[in-house]
Image (cartoon, rainbow, N blue to C red; front, side, top):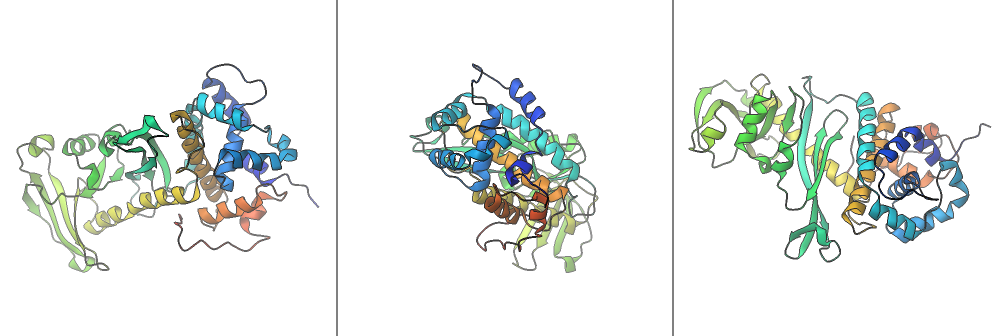
Length: 383
């Protein structure tokens, strides 16, 4: 019988240790470690994410129970005091950089999006993570409430969070969107919360297509009308230009206005885009696909630990969020690399139950020895 190391040991092999140590040296601050290390911090918090640990005590006691197996992970047991101090003091930027490395690896094996066109497709949105203002005074949001915002640009190629920005809760969505460096020729779908006519004009000048919903009070005139297929739900397809005194100056270009009625809900939508080559029904489908970014937010909040935190400083909170994002990419890489039929949630559940078992990781994920775990009806599922 062949010998296998623990599942978590095989999982960590996908993160080359020498690459991690190079990044750790680049993002080091303060005195050198005597016993602890950034690798020990990462492994401890990664296991906490995968196993669903909720508190600092819970994390440390879980690692203590597996003390005889930590040597094979290249890590040591961290006390609560040591782990807390590292989370508070050592820069979270290490895990932001690690996220970038993992993202590059995932992009290389991710499946393409489901549309026929070859343009990269992104959905932009943001979610608010509530914090207790008395515990996290640096995260002031409202008079009695604290919060931070997670801004995500989700690439529909593999549904990967290609762009992530974490800001304070007061930051407007459009502020983060303007800072994104989207590739030329890409298509970005946004809701009305990103309504900014000067940004639309900027996207158009940069060769980027956008799909959004037109505000009901927008003032415009119709320049051209095109034939529509009402059997597809399309009610109108027009070329318009804005006539408002301010709007016309901010966005002095002709745009496409598309009316669409959903045959299931009966609700009527009006879309705005600068793409004139795709058919009207495809534009409507692109906006509908924007819902994937909402599912992404729902999935990470239900399955990863980004709503309750084991540290109170800004650095500790961002460290935990970036390690959660690295965990998501690691799960995605496993799914893409080995073409697994299970959903991300099923993969996570199998890993949770077998982290310290000695068995072949690939055989475990292929389900050679266990039956697939059905997703919870109340949980969000990706893929």
